[in-house]
Length: 215
Ligand code: AMP
Image (cartoon, rainbow, N blue to C red; front, side, top):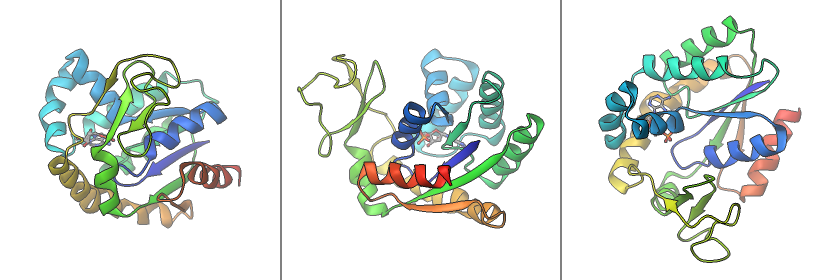
């Protein structure tokens, strides 16, 4: 069973996807993570994407859809995928349909995390992750139990995304409103959209998502 987590930047898609990976053995397919890895590795895709990402604009549909296809091909047929940050445009939604159909996969749920945009800026601008295991933290809302040491793996290195600054976040939100939110009706027409309060406690959000998936 494949699902899409939809919501503006900072809605908690990545956090919730990680939890579903741990609890349900699904695989997180985050185009943002794939692109950041490509930038870090200096691949041709990374070189093309970097400036666009730094501005908070969207990378081309062809690039991200190709990345998703490659990742799905590397997965076991029976493992569920969580699409995190993809699709982000009507074009990508159409590509995803074709990509899934070709592989005999079924999109079971589109879960929209509903959030208050003003609160998101504070959420995003304070967030950082463990450089080793990727666990997420926040300057205000979630510090490690021992300062400077990751709760999950004990590493001491942390990192922040270069696009997690207020100006870029505003652009990313505008992109979401203009290009991504309009794809919801496509899935609504299929009756597979569920809405979850993304401002609720993290555990409650996970419980709501699991309830949707478990049907
Ligand atoms: P994210 O980690 O999902 O917030 O993505 C970070 C940045 O990567 C975005 O602001 C875009 O520049 C780019 N990006 C990630 N996923 C996509 C996508 N599906 N379509 C276009 N650009 C994307």
